[in-house]
Image (cartoon, rainbow, N blue to C red; front, side):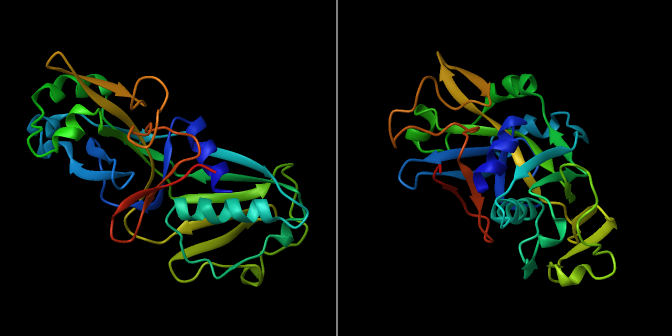
Length: 264
């Protein structure tokens, strides 16, 4: 059911990040490693383009991102989506998740407290003309494998309710722990008889999605293509994958290394 989360965020113009990462801010440089077949994060664009540190940031709130899942009679689909959505807001430890109390086949999941940090692609197009590419392998520069993440999205909570907005079949407000245990790094609460909220307790909010684009050198001029990596269809493993590619999940492990999961 990771596919459902990927498609949900793709439809909102974003690519999900698993595991979410703290202390990231646009613009950041990425490259595609043909040997490893994964995106590699190089870090702040300002390291190679000092003027990038002066770019104005747009920060604000995004509309809530909502998804409805029609699950099997045993609830596997909804449970799978919930686990992946909790990962997206930084909640990894889920000792117990039992959705039998909902009594519904169609559940609604809503990311809350969604904010963004972005720089305008037009501003990037100006500063990238001074990019220092000496630090990058020649094939990365000439192969169209440089990318810039220009927007990150953050979420602080997730709400669960029935798609029909009716109360849950069981009133769990008095003993929610009978159904849900998130460990010590997160909180779960019954906001009403029909709404359950999940909130991470970490001090730093992790980015769970991003927008990125491709860099291409044309006649000694750098061009930036938001939400794009290459022209035309992919032709094989030597080509860079699109930054917004349905079915591909970008994976951050605990040490900060990046990789990709293949499309399902």
